[in-house]
Amino acid sequence: MNPSRRPPRWRGLTLVEVMVAITILSFVTMIIYGAFAGMKTSREGVQRITDRYREARLALSRITRDVQSVYLSKHVPIDESLQVVETAFVGQQGTPADRLDFNTFSHLRLDRNARESDQAEVSYFGSQDPERSGVWDLARRVNPFLDLDPEQGGRVQLLATDIDLFDVEYLDSLTNEWVETWDSRQALEQTDRLPLQLRVILVLNGGQRASAGRARGTIRVVTKIPVALNRPLTFATQ
Image (cartoon, rainbow, N blue to C red; front, side):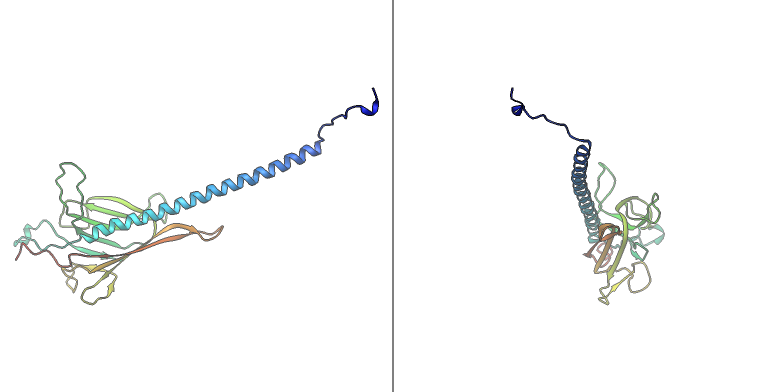
């Protein structure tokens, strides 16, 4: 056999070549993993912000439905000692959340054969989170059994978590100006009256991050709610 025609001998990879190949493969793997991790983080961030906007919109929708059916009633017995129900509309300032107490026709009877009507006492107020210091939630209280204290009783549920602000203003029909408080029980110009409109501002924490390493911004929603019945119900007392 001619030695010049002997087939070439294949040699193996050196240790340096193996290390270079492993390094390149690791680098490519890190790039791919980082890309997928970034996509997952972005998707979770978008989903969280979407959920927060939905939470804010649902809270305002619930408030709107209650406020649009708010009412006052002067249907009381001649003998005041026999009175067992008092209606009121009271708006108070607070930090970070105002408080609102009123009577409304918006109650839905959810339990079968429950001795309830469409009337209820409803409150909106800030409730401090018992598990997280400095965190406030927006709570709604509803009591379908009317009594002499429109600000107490009933069941409490959370409408929105981790709020930054819940601010309510009231449009006075006499002055055509927005005021920050309202009390239909006080012996002043607001006695037995309701505002024309309410302006509600709800701000939630946990919005979009402005840039890397910074705290997240806030989500702000605003609405104006007209009040249909501005005067007390008196049709049974005339």
